[in-house]
Image (cartoon, rainbow, N blue to C red; front, side):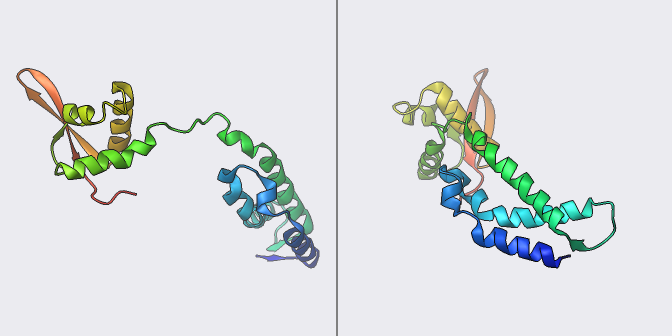
Length: 163
């Protein structure tokens, strides 16, 4: 698919005169989106062209204008994406737990032993959240065993290389 002559001029102006990504968003987490906005505009202009009822394979200026308008509208509200997301207080313990598990052999480490080693940093709820995250990611496997009528949990590392 190609751009019409008018759309080419519009695209060139848009691309050359767009603000620096650092000026678009002050939040570092959105810098990637800001840097790729022209890419999104081009892809969206193709979608706008394909949704046009008139047949053709040429992107016209109005397709490109619509794509720019849609991306600009989305960019205005994008900062809200991270508004309700608080930084996780437990993610930083993922590599620490993996390191301790590797130090202990990485296989069949008891829940109690791990909890005891991290009791000065994490309470039971936080520890459960960290272990649950590692299990959900597939880094650890949880092994329940019945010992003297009680279920005891053990963990083994499934991936030696994490990250």
